[in-house]
Image (cartoon, rainbow over all chains, first blue to last red; front, side):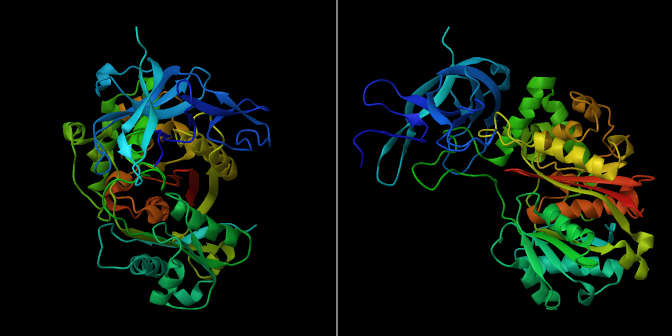
Amino acid sequence: MSDQPLPAVPYIKIPEAGEPYLEGHKCGSCGATFLGERSVCSKCGARDQMSTVTLPNSGKLYSYSIVHRSFPGIDVPYISAIVDLDDGTAIKGNLINVEPDPEKIEFDMPVDVVFDDALGRKDRDGNSYISYFFQPKAG
Amino acid sequence: MTDAYIVGVDMIKFGRFPEKTVPQIGAQSALLALDDCGLSIQDMQALYCGNLGQASGMVGQRILQEIGQTGIPVVNVANACATGATAFREAWASVKAGLYDCVLAVGVEQMGKGLLGGAGGATGIPKEGLLGSGTMPAVFAEAGMEHARKHGTTFEQFAKVSVKNHHHSTLNPKAMYQIETPLDQVMNAEMISYPNTKLMCSVNVDGSAAAVICSEKKAAELGLMARAVKVRASVLASDPWQERDLVMPDVNSCTRRAAAEAYEMAGLGADDIDLVELHDCFATAEVLHYENLGLCGDGEAGRMIDDGEVALGGSIPVNVSGGLLSKGHPLGATGIANIYEVSTHLRGEAGGRQVEGARIGMTHVIGLGSACGIHILEKA
């Protein structure tokens, strides 16, 4: 078992010192940004042009659904959200600290990316995980 | 290249058949399609079989073990919800290419109940409900809400799709359900993933559908042209790169690409189409495809459903079979079942739900991941 919590997905980076962040892979040829490591760009087909970038910690809500029925054992309701980060990278996750009510959710509402324990979920070895969430931008 | 014609086509009434095997369910529609044109399995030169649940299980060969092992080549196809359309298209292509002049396509599926969609990877921790939702109702809700943000589409407009398709299914004896669902019932049904309520989600059912495809020469020789249906266009597209691909499976751009190609192949435009069977896996999805298929301009889908233009009796009836929402959605069978529906109207044999004077129709399916299959059919 790891002493430290592990990233819930490989594109969450947890430095030894400092705050967790999201990592993207950007194509040097066409500029498309991807979540997760790759060597070929699926937009333009360029090979070996990828470099890592630190993704911004803020963005805007693009689309969402309020999930009332999920698989057994998953707490509902929750807001499944598509967010466009400030650099244009699209990312999906839970929108938290907003009532799960369409009246309370606005398209393009500014959100921050925050990192926290992955809802108490542990793997079979007992490891804890860090995940990311979206919440309305403060102020 | 020769033209290819559907000479026999049929489907079983969709339902739940846990006591049957997948090949048994497929065999039923294969026999019905053969009977529809008075041919036998001995007349078939190849079988193209679509099935998802047992994709590695040689379902096509096992169908022949049910209805006649003639030794013909069998191709088993899996392409998500475009599986049936892909099998049909492979059969069509083999006739167009002159490889065969009489072939059989079968789509079949046996479904469980419950939510479809990925629960995340095999390692680490489950991602569902942590990184949003991968369930199909949520994924298509998000696609619908993208339309809402662009065009102001409302929950009520999405719900009206379900009212319409459930109404249509009351006229289709082969639909899983024949039940009217008024607007308040649809909107007040259990919320699955806003804005999709339970009555706005397609029905998981078992089913199969099959078609016999002949070359023009063969169809004429067999004396089968009177009820034949000409395949004017057969198109398959995958999803071209889109900026939100990784987090939002794209059903729009691959449909638009396939539609443009299909209209070009047929030498027709959207105005020429008399009826459409499109992929209403969720009520939110149907609305997107009015625009994707060019049935209306961008931003006009809400008005189309409000004005009843897409209802039976409207200017361009959509999903008069009841659609996936009420007829049911046996994944591998759906693409051929919608070809059956359109063919039945073109033949003037659709009974109470007949689209009067239908001459040209379109079928559309989307397999998430993504694959889009479109066919344009015309009465011979």
